[in-house]
Length: 459
Image 1 (cartoon, rainbow, N blue to C red):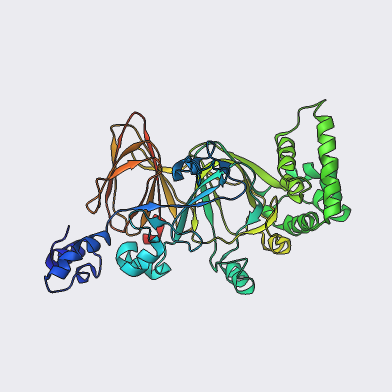
Image 2 (image 1 turned 60 degrees about the vertical axis):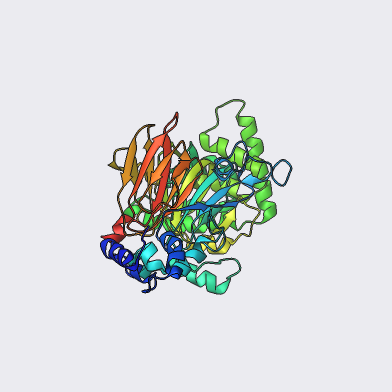
């Protein structure tokens, strides 16, 4: 702990953190001594408490990673806790900011009071102000999320200005999911050939698309990256998504009855099995039919999926860590009881027809794999540390949030305020320019994730 202005100034110069030496008055008075601990906390590794979101699609305690990490296994208000545990948020987003475990103060407010330049790094503070540019989450998906897309920066600003109560952020929301368990999702439009197969073999979809659009798509050729197909695809998809509730209900009922009959004489395709599962979760929903338009993606643990702006997707099942730009803007159009903005979604999509790239990360040192998306706001490290081993995370010029997913051990840093014990569910905020050493102990390995600003941003 710095015990004088001189020591604090020297530390600030050594770390390249402006203003560190100004946090203590020039007079070495008793008041300065009383504020010593507060000054140290300003640049310490801090324990955080994440915020839990109880969305309907989440898993219940006993079957939810989010519940386990957040301590949701305990009884709620004296009785059995039957709430779904869907997401654990770690960051400064105003909807659900993390708080300091020691005081309960929100991380967002704490950063604002301390001054972001020293804690977030000068480049990060200059680019994004006093907030973390990324939002870190854990998701426990027990039933399908909505068919949705996230607007690009320009559209996000426009939607926020037009309907701020629905679109609360003027920021875009690219995101990346790293599978913790087997994880399933719909993402992006299928190829031209697969789409033609759908129109040939799924009469219920063909009927809602319309004869004219179906003919155009059946005659389309896949060249120039599918650019020529996009107007036909957009028109066909829009026809499907804007069909009347009665028409959709009848089509879904026909599809369900036909597949149940055919399942007795043939093995249904994986996509057909999926749509029957979706129909059970969301009866009479247009999203059941829309699923035929999208790639069905399965991730193994450790594999990741990046979703850029204006790309359709829906998480279906499994558990993952997710990182994104700090935003909660979602445009929905199916598989949800929430507000649907169908016209906006149909008009904003890119209509690219590519199977999404499955990211497997790159090793950056022993036991550590890094996932680097195209977005400058974030990246994720996955650390699988055997018991008795240690790893040192080098200082970076931006902030990080660490989450202990499984196992136990210790986190060491020059600026720790406690003994640094780390166990399942512990969350730590690590200021810029802070080296962290992680040691695994206990009977099993330690699984830990770090979210931080994309390292390419600093190049």
